[in-house]
Image 1: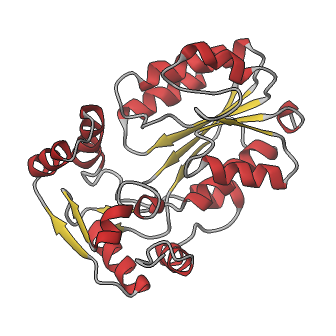
Image 2: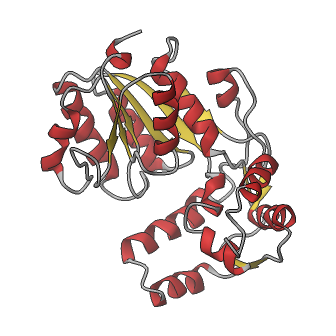
Length: 279
């Protein structure tokens, strides 16, 4: 193995859905970790390039997770600049968290591949944890999930699977130059996903479909920043147009087992009390 196991691994978004899980797994393997976040030491912020060099000092590998999403304008350029800076600081290993069906994400992939580092791409479907750790959590708690999407199918991937793959990629041989497209084992529509959450949690949770324009207007009324409204609009109108309604074997290829089914995610999340109104 390369120097990635003796030098710290910088995990960008190290307090996020995949980053914190990856940190736990690497630490369990006695691999030193540096958390790349605004609250980290040294701090890392995608909007403050002055802090990038300090975060990279002495690290052997980087897990690149871009906030808020690689689909946003300028994300690929920022990842390109960061990757080249990392290489200039002696970092040899880059792992990029990417998205399926996002042209800007795939531009970022190409730039990482051209950076001069040893690279691996994790191209992921929608996270199951968006229903419990992200923007769909509060609607699930409220009992009504309103979205501008219908019966299009999505192979939701569990963040635990992404973290397991990332940990293997960063600690084992055999993953250089691989593009692992990571999906769950089953295609599910958003209404079906909400119904499964309702069934697992024993709660009455409705799914309501609304037009995209009405959804955008509602976000604006609730004070959602314009750039995030743009991102959500992009994801629901472009990425969720059926282009990703297929399964892949990326998890199996990377770590030799099948990905977790959405039903396992709902059972585990329910057991943890995440959707419990009295928590």
